[in-house]
Amino acid sequence: MLNDSNIARIIDAAMSKTADFAEVFIEESRSSSVSMLNGRVIKAGSGVASGVGIRLMAGTNVVYVYSNDFDADGLIKLAGEAADALKGNSRGEIKELESRCFRTASDINIDPMTVRKTDNVAFLKQASDHALSFDPLITQAAASFTNNMRTIRVVNSEGINRESSDTRMRFSVEVIATKGNEKQTGRIAPGTLRGYEFVNEYPIIEKTTQCCETALRMINAGYAPSGKMPVVLGNGFGGVIFHEACGHSLEATAVGIKSSCFTDMLGKKIASDKVTAYDNAKIKGEWGSYEIDDEGGISSNLLLIENGILKNYMVDKLGSRRMNCESTGCGRRQDYSYAPTSRMSNTYIDKGEDDPKDIISDTEYGLYCSQMGGGSVDTTTGEFNFAVNEGYMIRNGKICEPVRGATLIGKGSEVLLNIDRVGNDLELSAGMCGSISGGIPVTVGQPTIRLSSILVGGREEGEV
Image 1 (tube, rainbow, N blue to C red):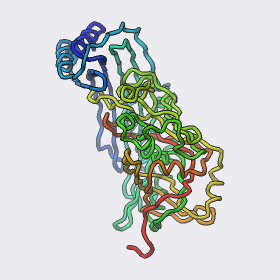
Image 2: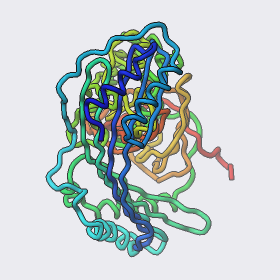
Image 3: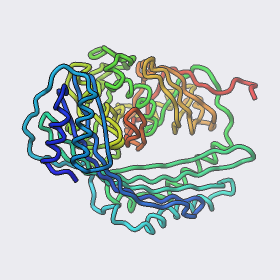
Image 4: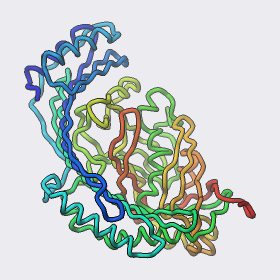
C-alpha cells in the first residue's frame, strides 16, 4: 500500500497546475459468496480487490482517474496527466496533513470473514429444503450469502487523513410458486454490519415460511383494480417509494444542477405535516451505515423533512461547491473506479402516532401493499411507477382478498403531501441503490403509512 510520503507526492503532482483541490482514495476489499439453487451449490467464490482513485477539482470542474497498480511513480505520473487535463485558473494551497483518524460502523462479535463456507451452505440449505417441502406449487428455491470487508483511506489537499473499515453481510432466499404458466415469488434479503451472530439469531425457517405463503397467496390471487384510491403501504421495504421518488431528488447530484423537483425548496412545505424523514448513516450495525464517507467526510444523522418542511439536502464535495453550502458527509461510491457523488445511507420516514390496525380499520376501501417491488423515477419531475409484489384489497376497514399486478403511479411531491396517516411501527430494510457512482448498500424504511389518494394501475373490469 502507499505510504504517507508517496501520497504527498501524488497530491503535489495533482496540484501542480490549476487544481484547487486534490484527493487520493485508497481501497482494499475482501469478499466471499455462495449461491444455491434447489438445495445445491451452483456458485461459490472469494476475491480481493484494491485500487487508487485520484480526483482533482478547479471550482466545479473535475477530473477523475484511477488505477489498480500501486506503483508510486506510475500514480504520480497519472496525477500529473490529470492535472494537465483539468481546466482551472490558479493553483490551490496544500494544507498540512492531520493525524490519521480511524472509524468503523460495524458492530461485530463473530467476524463473518472467519466463518467457513460450509456453515453458510448449511444455513442456506435449511431454507431451501424447507421451501421445497412446503407445498407442491413451490417449484424453485434460490438462496445466496455474501460478505465483504472494505477498508478505505482518504487523503486530500485540505489535510483530511481518514480511514475506515466495515464488514457487511447479506443473505437472501427467493421461492417461486408455479401454477400453469403463472409464476409468483416470495423473497427475503436482510443485510447488516453486525457479525455472524446476526445469522445465528435469524429465524430462517419462519421467514422462509412467510416467503412460501406470500408466493402461494399471489399465485392464486385475482388482478388488482385500476383507478385512484387510498393506498396503505406496509412498513419496512415500503420505504423504497420514498427512497426512489423523493430521496434521489434531495441529493445534490440532482439539486446541484437544478434538475430536481425540490430545487430551491429549503424551508418550504413539501410534505404532509405528519411526515418527518431522515438520512441517518450513524446507526451502528445497520446495512447502509458508515462513519466516514468516500470523500473522508464524517457521516451525519441528517434531518431531511420535519413536519412536512424541507430542512436539508444530501450534499457531497462537488455538490457543496455547486450549491455554496457545506457537505453533509454523504459522498459515496461503489469502489475506487468511480468518482463519488451524493448518495443516501439509511433513509426513512420516521414513526408517527397511529396504530397500524387503526389505519386499516379507518380505510373504507383501498389497496394494502404489504411488499413493494422495483420501479422507476424521473428525478426532474418526480414521476414514478412501482410494482406491488404483495397486495390486498381493503374493504370496510378490513384486509380482504389478495390481488396481483398492481402498480403505483404518481409524483414524489404529490405522494408526500397525500400521506394522511403515519404508523408507530417503523422498520428498516436492506437494499442496493444504483446511480452515477455505482451500486452501494442502502437501507430504506418507514412505518405503515396511508396515502389518501394515488393512481393504481391494474386491470379494468372485464379486461383480460
